Every structure is written in C-alpha cells, then in structure tokens.
Length: 394
Image (cartoon, rainbow, N blue to C red; front, side, top):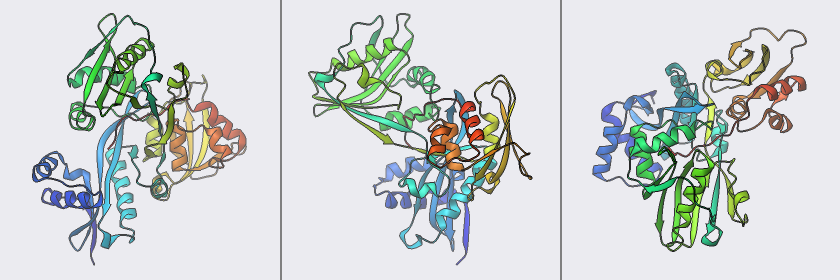
C-alpha cells in the first residue's frame, strides 16, 4: 500500500463529508452537502490516503483565541475521523503530527479541540484547559432582582450589536474565541436558535445579552453575557419575568461564576463540566506572545519540556522575562548554569499552566511539574492568575 498525507483537493470534499457523516452518525441532505462544500476550505482539511483513497482526515480551522486580552492565532482541530477498516493502524497519530507541523509553519502557536476522549488526546500533548458550570434552577429559585437603571429589549440577530458586548466580555478570559461575522451567522445563531435580548445601560450602551429558548416549560439559556453587575441584575430580572412560561431554567457559566452565592436559596443544581482541550504548538513563539506577571525586574527560568509529537518543543528552554512581563524562550544545548534550577513537565502541563487552568503549585503537588522546588516557586510568582472559558463549540 502507498500512504500519503496531504491537504484535500476540491473534488475530494464529498469524500470528507461522507466520512464525517458516517463517523459522527448524522445525515446530510443534498442541499446541506452543497452548502458545506461551499464553506469548506480544502487547504484546511488534511487527509491520510491509502492507494489514493481517503482513509482518515482532520480539519484545522484558522481561528483566534484571546490570551490575556490579546488575540492569538489558534488552530482549531475538528472532524478527526477514520474509516473502520483503517483504524488502529497509527494513521491518526501520523496525521496529528503532520497537522501540528502545518500549524507551526502557518504561525498558529496554539491549538484547541473538543475531545471524544481526554485520554486519547493527552497522548499527543493536548490537555484540558477549561471547565464550565452547568446550572439548573426551578422558577422559585430565580433571583428576585430589583429595578436597575438600564433596560432590556428583545433583539434580532444583529451580530455587530451582540459582538460589541461579547468582545469586551471574552477578553476577560483565556481561551475564548474571537468571533467574526461568519462565526456569528453560521455557528452562534445556527447552533443557538431561539430568542435574544440585550441589556442597555443608562447611556444606551449595550452591556449584556441573553440567547435563550423556551419550550415544554423549560427555559434553556444558551448564552448569558454581562459586563457589570447592573447588566447581570437586569438580565436576571428579564429571565425571572418568564416564570409563567417555565418551571425550570438551565444555563452554563464560567468557572468563576458566583450565581449560587448571590441567590437566596443557593442549593440549586450545579455541575462542573470539563470541556475543551488545548496544546501549545510552538513553545518559543507562544512565549513571545505571552505576558507574564510584571515583577519590575528581569528573570531567567529554565524548563525541560517533553513533547515527542512536536519535537521542536522537546528539550531544555531558557526563558528571559522582562520587568513588564514580556518574554522570550530559547532552546538550550547545554545544562543550566550552576545554581539555576529547572522544572520538568510535558507540553500539556505547560499549556494548562500558561492558560491559567491550573496553578504551578497545584501541578507540582500533583507531580506533574517536577524539579527544583525553588524554581517551581518562581513559576508560581510569574504566571498570571487567569480564568479560562469558552462559550463556543467546533
């Protein structure tokens, strides 16, 4: 058999759609197939071919994620699938390795994906980077909010209006997507069908919104976004006004959300759900975009990273961190100077740490950040405290 890994040709998009619909068990109408083909970019679809036939494939979306308020190019991995007769032959492993190389060459220093199995993708360097809280309230538990200075108005699907709020909100978290018009129209509004309302402050500035639907006595809130407490209270008052239409309200929220504490009855249904995974594609390039905590002095840290899937990340690196937190990472051929301790970890652990999902001290206690204790304490001081979140799916 002759094997080849390459991007797809336009005439091979049908084969990709057929494989996806089989692997993920959904049906595609002829109209939907044509629409998908119009929106697909074959240069972003990588296939593993055996004797010219598509055996496995993956898609790498060209996206941007916010990291510490700055947009960073990200490779969104999706649609990883293999025909049954080609499974367990290492094709996906080789496809992933080639995809990571392509992301590096394309300047995508970070990659994210939704795992069918966390353990599977951990083998290739991805690690969990965000959870979300899932709430369930009966109508008697809804907040009894007082009037606010602003107002809530039902809204049409004006993506620019919603994005004015979303973009400011998303910059507060690490790992949120930068949304453009196409993403709003083809992903957000299509996946989250229903009603929409916007909260406006006294000055008329939009400060929050809610996307939701009400059906069978259930109010399902698909996005609840607010920039300040006034917007939060105004939107919850709007939600509570639906009490005659529903018996139950469900919604999701970021890991730092305080809703239960703010309720008269905090014993609501709540669950923490591990969600997306991330991995640093190009460690030196990622560090060059990253801003560490400003300490007012220059520092040097040493880390030995294990990354067999992306060998350019595998080895010892010296980080130079400036007074304002700006940094560079340089691969070292020799050992650190005497007295300069190092830490050791896998690329997944480093990703979870720099994304803000887990603190260096917690990773050290778990045995995932190994090495000199004083060096680990220095990482604890320089890694900013952040919260991760993702409202989207791909």
